[in-house]
Image: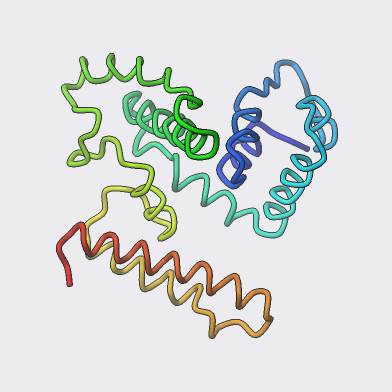
Length: 205
């Protein structure tokens, strides 16, 4: 059965910004026992979109914890503080808007969430782009944190440790199956790119 949490997990693992937007607008209301096909019918997905959705569902079934971790690490609030929760949701909508513009061109992203950021700034004195106190991060930087499976704001030593753990987990030499090895090569390349980004950020050689 499809739950609200599962929909949010799909939003984190589906690459298509249009599908993420449709999922974000899906209302459960008083519905119960919604299955995958019924939900796709209600969203009026075409054949290509249905295949993307089924792929995400299969990915979730094969590795529920891994799919949940991708959702959790990307958008989990740092605490129960309302402003921390706001930061988390802000970043989610910021990512969606930026990715929509990357795919469909400038002016297509919905940035209305930025209006609400003014209230947060007025009541906390934080600059919207400040990273020093765990505020907002660029989409690029958050992707690198997600690749290393860590939360934003860690020290370089913590990032370095996460890099080593991630490389052990996804090193291609660990896999015999050709498809899994190819996937590991892709992931390990992203891990190296993420680590290089943080080395430059922290002025490490």
